[in-house]
Amino acid sequence: MSLKEILLQDMKEAMKAKESGKTALSVIRMIRSAIRNTEIDNKIELDDAGVGVIIAKEMKQRQESLEEFKKAGRDDLVEQTAAEMDILKKYMPRQLTSDELHQIVMDALAGKDMISLKMGDVMKIVMPLVKGKADGRMVSQAVKDVLQKNS
Image (cartoon, rainbow, N blue to C red; front, top):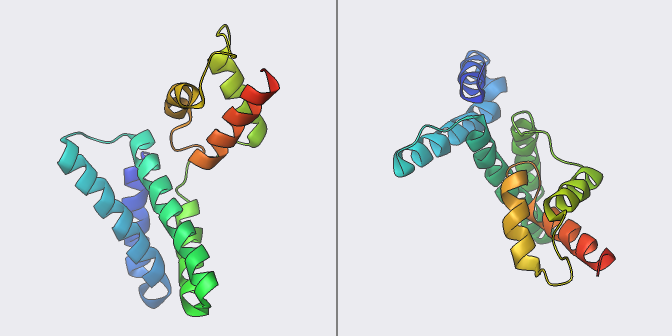
């Protein structure tokens, strides 16, 4: 079953749950809307990997919002955003660990002269390999670590 089908099925269950499924329903509708908009804008049919990228983007937005709400002392919004993130986690692709990420960077750079490589060049190679599976900050840190270790 594809991720889109799972989202549709879960949306139906959230509708049946009435009041207790309100948050899940709104989050799932938001995800499905973002998927539909992306498909229409780009005139493509998204696969599970593409859907995962959209979900990761939504998760990142909520993470940033959560930090801002905490700084502002908005406990009500912190609670709501955390609940939305819990729902999004259910659909997120498995995130890579730091060790797995370092290994992917090492594999991508195998056979290349690491002394002459620049950070941006390495990021261009690695990011498509980990799209939706790792946060850009984590990838950046892993690339820095590998480049420093081998220079």
